[in-house]
Image 1: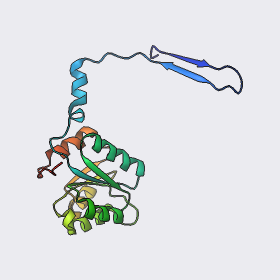
Image 2: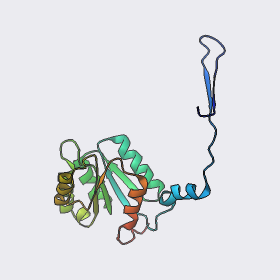
Image 3: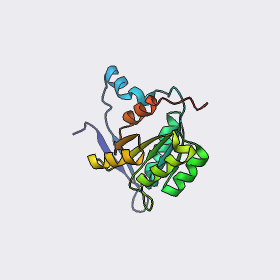
Image 4: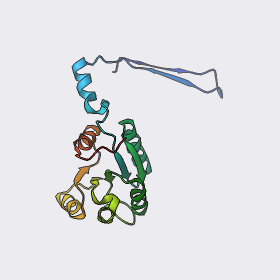
Length: 171
């Protein structure tokens, strides 16, 4: 089906097994390859301080790592109180905030963050599974600048970050 092969090797019972999977590499035209890499492969013009807030630790840490690979300073928090505390210390320029947090939801975190000196001028982006028009309106009313619905394509996120008109963070 794929034009590849699978081998299973073992020296006998209790000796473990080795599996080898071989799949052919499909040739990708150079134009398609560079278009697919597009903005994800490029470095940012300015490094930004980005705070990621998501109660899913794996999602938060993965996004934090991706932002660091892109050249940004990134930190993550898993709930509202931790996010507010970290924002006061880290002074993020951009906050990527999940709405469905336990306890204090993302709407309340955004409201409280806007009241802090650290969050007054930050770009606050909802990164959430809530995608109805009423969710977007509620985000706007809570102080979010943008509303992205999960799963967010990396290219979309990188373009949004690149479009931010903030002073360079000095990094």
